[in-house]
Length: 413
Image (cartoon, rainbow, N blue to C red; front, side, top):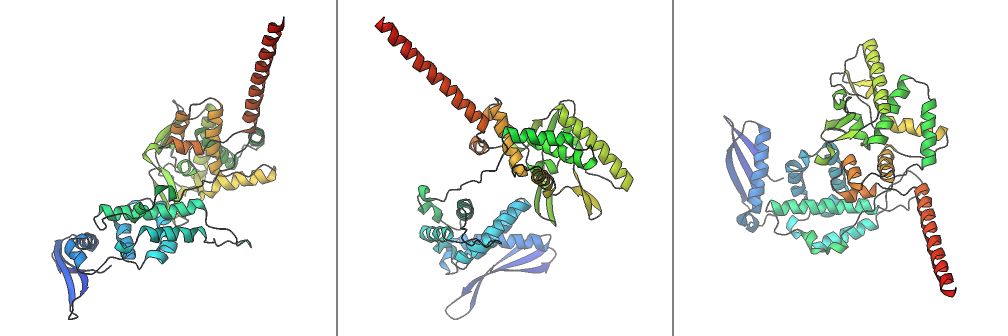
């Protein structure tokens, strides 16, 4: 970004913005004196000053035009940096690869709807790097939607910050906007789920098995996200009311970047109910955990329910996201059960609750969804219920046919 910060002492700072050169080759600059308690605060003031200068009519007339790359850095500091680690990382990965290559050097105010439309068309023909020999895989519709969604959001911020007069995405008719095709997570039919539960009952009552069974049943009964379960602490359990308070989540980027913070949305802060079976598993797990910590001399200052075996920075930490998945996958392979993921358990919780008579709004609340349309994505048809529905309909049709025949016989008599 074209700008510098100069420390003038006594918390006084000079901000300088380069505005290019005049006809005689002399540099044009805008300057401003500010009071700031640190260099970081001064650099933040520089960002705001840059935004003020570039959005001011005189700034626009100077001929210096903010590039998309310059704006993206400003957007990252002012907006993206306030998001969770995973959201920041996702945005930067999407932005710094395809989007920046296409728009980075362009003046922000020169980007049009046609530019964006052409970019989306390029994405539709972009192939994805794959470790397998199959190189025919194209970028998914959902991934293309994410690229467009991020662009649209960034341009909207540029309008809100008075850098742009108009969002170029608005020049594209909404029926042409890329739409996501969400991945349908696999779930178990009733027979497979019953088989798995019986397998769990036959497992030895060891520390490792009790811990993973508790995680599994929590996910299946409550519909909680994996990250929400991994972040649970013992004070989140209300033993008398049989309630688990969901109020935080593990945000995992990689082994060095793990964050425990607020859940995905405000609606995700919620209470979920569990049964005596789950509470008994948790009680047994707590006894096992206390014994293991005391034996090894470790402390659990945050009171996490599910701890990793290894240590990071000499502190016990919550389990990693792969913990429950690897346990599930191992059992599925051993007993020839269909492959599922941890997130599949969330889909199963919603599907089975609805099939057992729970209202859609109840399932929405249980999952912590903002929009009931999102909840509908989690509902899967079960073969047993489809057969039962067909059988019920068949019986109705049979009765209606019989009634017609009886009425006709009555006419002839």
